[in-house]
Amino acid sequence: MKLKICIAEDNYFLTKAIKEKLSFFDDITVKFDAKNGAELIGKLEENHNVDVVLMDIQMPVMDGIKATELVKNKYPQIKIIMLTVVDDDEYVFNAIKAGANGYLLKEIDAEKLHKSVLEVTKGGAPMTPSIALKTLNLLRNPEFTATINTAESDIKLTKRETEILIQLSKGLNYNSISDNLNISPSTVRKHIENIYKKLQVHSKVEAVMKAKKSNLI
Amino acid sequence: MKLKICIAEDNYFLTKAIKEKLSFFDDITVKFDAKNGAELIGKLEENHNVDVVLMDIQMPVMDGIKATELVKNKYPQIKIIMLTVVDDDEYVFNAIKAGANGYLLKEIDAEKLHKSVLEVTKGGAPMTPSIALKTLNLLRNPEFTATINTAESDIKLTKRETEILIQLSKGLNYNSISDNLNISPSTVRKHIENIYKKLQVHSKVEAVMKAKKSNLI
DNA sequence: AAAAAAATACGACTAATGCCGTATTTTTTT
DNA sequence: AAAAAAATACGGCATTAGTCGTATTTTTTT
Image 1 (cartoon, chains in turn yellow, red, cyan, green):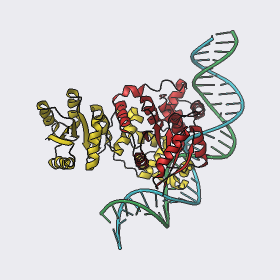
Image 2 (cartoon, helix red, strand yellow; image 1 turned 90 degrees about the vertical axis):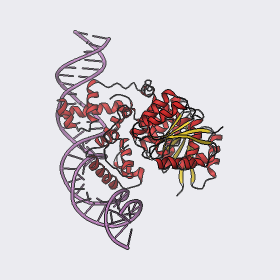
Image 3 (cartoon, chains in turn red, blue, brown, orange; image 1 turned 45 degrees about the vertical axis):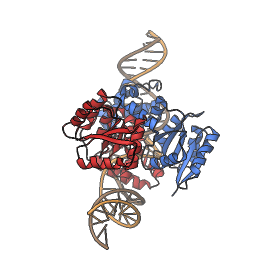
Image 4 (cartoon, protein in one colour; image 1 turned 30 degrees about the horizontal axis):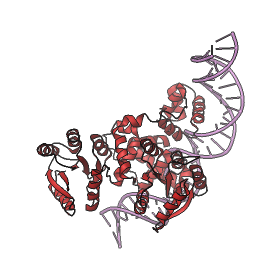
């Protein structure tokens, strides 16, 4: 029997795009769609014979987090996959707390979306690699899961700077870091100098703590 | 350039099986293997030019969790994928806490193993669906993650030492701490020296990180 | 192709840290 | 009261860290 899914997404074109992606697969059928959480709840009240909901996070009237919570409370058997353009920490964590079964970026291609839908119905938890990583990071830092930071700091570290911060967080000194990353100690020092400027700190401990608090590492 | 990986696995036949699985792919080369965590550490000390470690969890002498912790502390850039026969909650959580980047079941087929190795080097977090689910469940139940590490660490800091550690965690230097606590800088240094001995560390960052991990601050 | 950003690298200098030993005073436990 | 633990304190010395300035190469963006 075909898997019955529905879509909650405020952007009409994206809804259409998702439907097109899924149209290639004959084991899935889109039963209906809704343009926000409230509409989804209403339609599910009429007919909740649905296997999977593809849920946008950002929607007017009622967003995907709240809708997930309501749907999961009333119809726990329905699997919910969150769709989002950004893999923001706060969204990921709140969606998981609300009971989402999977979490994908909207840019996902047709085949992966199809696989994810099948996976979630088998009890799996489809996630894009970047989001899987975020869940691990959240687990590693339980102190930050308790108090979600709403203040989005616009501190941007480069890839290399992040790598070096991670090494710093292990208590490694300049020489060890330079050895690990195959660059000269001078370069390590310069990177750290730049990191300090960006974070506005003046020591390793400060840098590591601030980075952890800002979810930079 | 080929990805350099190594294998830590006590069962010779499984090591061989993994090597065979990977032999189909010419972008990966197995540099060496070890039959337990201790041997892995030893070999990495000679040559840590390795991108990914495939690590068994259950091994004699030193298990994969402990080995992961040590490797990650010394060479944070090395990616570690845990391999296990069971997706037990506690194992998964401890492996993640230790710093594992991915978590796969040993029954994985060659292609998925290959994909996972590539994914982890790109910063992703490869997981089998059942384990991805466990991470979500762990996140949804913070009370479980909070109360897991009760067994270990009979490290006891005195009241003063704890006070000083908290100051350290703010990135304060000896003079500021001495000023804050109304004791001489010499005393601060001595306290910190004692803290280091208790925690078996050699720097501020290490001390703060270890204290956080052990719920001492 | 040009411009901007990121990564690389060195030298010099001062400040801070980590580690050693030793020692006295205060507080707590037995 | 005696013993143990904790807190206080100093000096010395080698290493590491933090802060300048400057400059080239590589990668990414426009």
